[in-house]
Amino acid sequence: MTIQESGTARPAGRPRSEKAEKAIVEAVLDLIGEGMGVSELTIEAIAARAGVGKTTIYRRWGNKEDLVVDALSTLKAPLPPLAGTSVRDDLVALVDAMRREHGQARSRCVMNIAMSEADRYPQLFERFLQRAVEPRRKAMREVIERGVASGELRADLDVDMAQAMISGTMLWHTKWGPAGDLSLDLAERVVDAALAGMAP
Image (cartoon, rainbow, N blue to C red; front, top):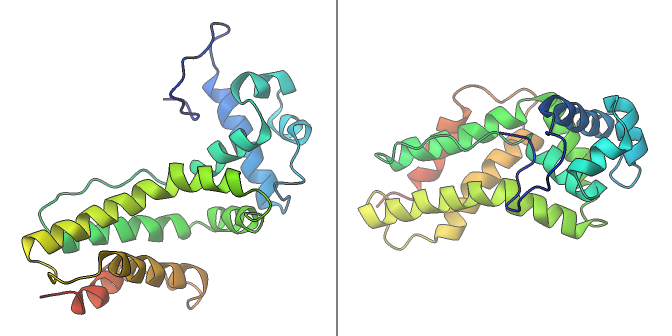
C-alpha cells in the first residue's frame, strides 16, 4: 500500500514510486521536526531535502496541505486489533497505542510544531483529525458503549465524559507528566484508574 490513500482513481501515467513517496514524506517530517512551521514549508524545500523534482511531488499531491496531512498521518500507528472479549483489555490496547506513539521523540516534536499552527490552517488540521484521530475516537467510544451494554460498565455512564477522562489522562502523561513516565504499564494504570469510577 502506498503512503497516500485516496478514494479517487489515479490518472494513467508513470508508476508511482513508493521509495520517492517515502523520501518526500520523510523530508516533510524532517523539516517540521527541525523547526520549520507549515507556513514556512515550501515544495522547493521539500523537493531539495527529498532529492526529487517538484514535479514528482505535484504528481502525487495537489498541494502542500495534502502532503502535510499525509505526512502527519504516517506518525499515527494503525489501530491495534481488539479482541472484543474484555472492555478493559480493549481499552488498554487503545491507550497503549497512544503511549507508543508519544514515546517517540521525533513524533512528539513534529506534532507539537505542526499543531502550533492549527489556528492558521484550520481546514488542514480538521482533515488530519478526521483521517488520523477520529478512527481512534470512534474505536474507543464503541468499546465503552459495548461495556455499558454488557454490564461491564455503569448503565448511567456518560460515554463522552468517560472517553475524555481516559484520553485526557493519557494526554497529560505524554505532554505534561513527569519526564520519561511512559512506562510499559502506563496504559493499564490509566485504564484501571478510570474503570474504578465506571464500574457498576
